Image 1 (cartoon, rainbow, N blue to C red):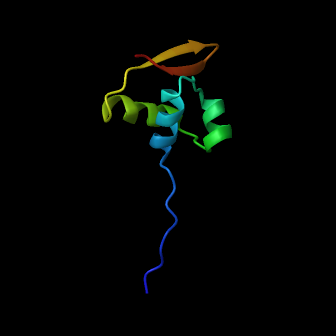
Image 2: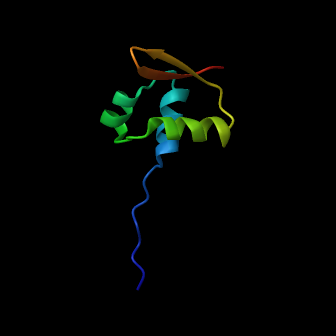
Image 3: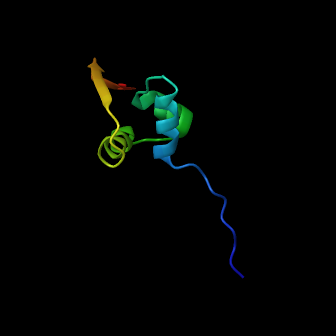
Length: 69
């Protein structure tokens, strides 16, 4: 008998929902809120696979991402 797995939102969907709500995200926020350790990889997928226009600003070595309309 096959066990039914619990479905969880993917990291891409979590970050997409966060950005489309008008918020910015950085690696520290992603780690604390969503347990995402490779935010840059998620942003890469959102940009290239989903065609989102995401702006990156870097301050003191910390990247912050924001969805640009």
